[in-house]
Image 1 (cartoon, rainbow, N blue to C red):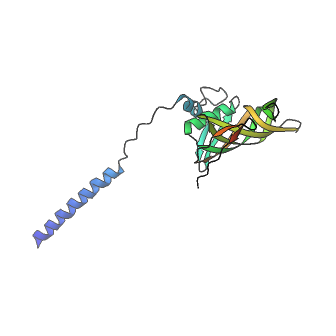
Image 2 (image 1 turned 45 degrees about the vertical axis):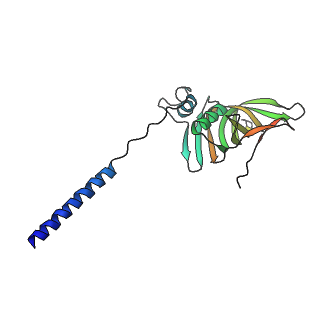
Length: 202
């Protein structure tokens, strides 16, 4: 009887030692997979300090991930389209809707259908009350189509298609709602302008 009890005790201790060893192994994190070095575009999107003296001294990310996509906060002097394009390349965003608010120097364009070109007009030191747009791809590069409304110190407002924009005194907050579909933009030969193409996934 004593022999049987001792044998059972030894078996139980052996099982405990085995389970403990497995448990300890499970607690040891697996070595992290080697990450590829970021491209120049990706580094530019991630690290603002090197390019823009208006950022704090410590390295500040230009964007973070959110449940529906991303949030970008650009600072005075940032070229808005260049930064969004660099971010899209870095994160490989298939397509997205854009919305933004903030301070800017902006160039609007009004489409002249007869000449098939935009008539530009620039406004400086304005507050962008609203910016809406889309992010797609064209010939392997990000393509942004955005419209906006800007207000000045007299509370006069201007708006239209945004040709270019630089962040003014302050910041510009950009909400990116990402989509899984890769969308392409191309020239519509009838109107001579870029048009967003939709693919039916059904």
